[in-house]
Image (cartoon, helix red, strand yellow):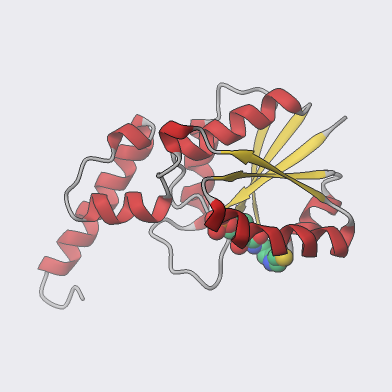
Length: 169
Ligand code: PNS
């Protein structure tokens, strides 16, 4: 059984991520979406929320599973018997960022990395840009599933409420 891992922070998952996961699912028997805990980054959504959003967004794909992970991605892949990491690449900058990690992961455990070119319609979409545009009142619904767009709107409204509350930071 050929199993691939699609790793990411997915804070939140976008249609660009889903395009890559769906394409990976057509090439592998099973795809494991690995949601990183990202100790360094202060996320908008916590790990359980991100896993739930990814699971809901991928629910129609029977061969796609979702799991949280921390520690080394290469070790996670080895422990799950996944021979391959699949990552979407939007630009040369993405490739430059991903290449050393792909090589390091290969050295660590032998796991391969396959890069999928992002579909043109999603090639400018990132979770960070979606968060920023949404926080400033822009429409990000084209880039998210309806459930994720609703969760993002709710979270930003909560944060706004906190800010407007005396002592809310
Ligand atoms: O695309 P993203 O969202 O920035 O990806 C984040 C993630 C979790 C996939 C990445 O930070 C990662 O691979 N973390 C695992 C830690 C690790 O293995 N570091 C060494 C890389 S060679």
